[in-house]
Image (cartoon, rainbow, N blue to C red; front, top):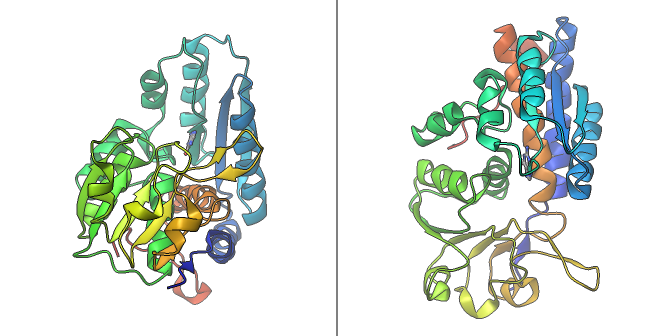
Amino acid sequence: MAAKIIDGKAVARELRAEWKARAGCLRARGIYPGLAVILVGDNLASRVYVRNKVNACREVGIHSELHEFPAGVPEEAVIFRIRQLNANRTIHGILVQLPLPRHIDNRRVLEAISPEKDVDGFHLYNVGALVAGSAVFPPCTPYGVMRLLQHAGIAVEGKHAVVVGRSNIVGKPMALMLLEAGATVTICTSKTRDLADHTGRADILVVATGRPKLVSGDMVKDGVVVIDVGINRLPDGRLVGDVDYESVARKASHITPVPGGVGPMTVTMLLVNTIDAAERDARCAPPAETGCRRSPAITA
Ligand code: GUN
C-alpha cells in the first residue's frame, strides 16, 4: 500500500490564507495584531526560525517586532523587556525563542510573559489549562499536528496513539491533545525498552525525539498514520526526520514528509494564536458577514 503523503506545506498555505482574512477583519476595525519575538544570543538555528516567524507575520498581515539581546545579557534585562511588552497594548503575542543561554532560567523568563500574550503556550498557566482540557494557547507544534490530522480526515477518537518523545514543547502537550481528542495514549521516549513493541501497536504514531531515523518500517504495523516531527541534518547535509521515511511509508496509510510536513505548521499555528490573542483582546468575534471564522476547538 502506498502511503498518502500529508502535505504540511499545502495545508499551511490554505490556513494562512484564512488567517490573512482574519487579520484583515481585525485591521478593518483598527486593530493590528502584533507579535513580539525575543531572541537571545546567536544560535544559528534560532535565528533562522525567528526569521521565518517574522516573514510569516508579514505574509498574513501581523505586525512583528524582533527584540534581540546579546548572549551575555542579564536575565533581569530580558524579564524587564517582557514586562514592558506585557503592558504594550499594540502587542498581542510574546514569544521567547528557545533555547536560552545557560545562565538564564527558562522558567523565570517564560513565567514573566502575561498568560494572555503567551502565544507559544509555554507559561505554566497555559500548561495547566491544557492539562485541564481547556487550552488557551495550544503549543504550536502539537496544535499543528492536530490540524494536519483533522485536515487529512483522520479520526482520533478511540484510536491508540503512541507519542515518542517527552519534551515540554512537543511530546507532553501532544499526548495531552490526543488524549483530549479521545485517543488512548502511550508516551515513550527514545530510551523506552522494546520501543518497537509500543510503536508496533500504534494506530497513530507521533515521533519527536531528535534522533534521526529512530523508527523504521519493522517497528510499525500496516495502516498506521505516521507524523514525523523530527528534523535532523545528516553529516552529508541531507535533512531527515526521526522516522526512516522509505521503510515506514511502505506500511503506513498516511505519513508526513521531512521537510514539508509538520515544520510549516508550527509557524502557521503561531500566527493563529496571535490572531486569537488580538481577537480576545478586542473582545471582537469576527462579524458573520465577513465570512471570518474563529479557530475551531482543538479537539474537534
Ligand atoms: N525552539 C524550538 N521550538 C520552539 C518553539 O516552538 N517556540 C519557541 N519559542 N522556541 C522554540
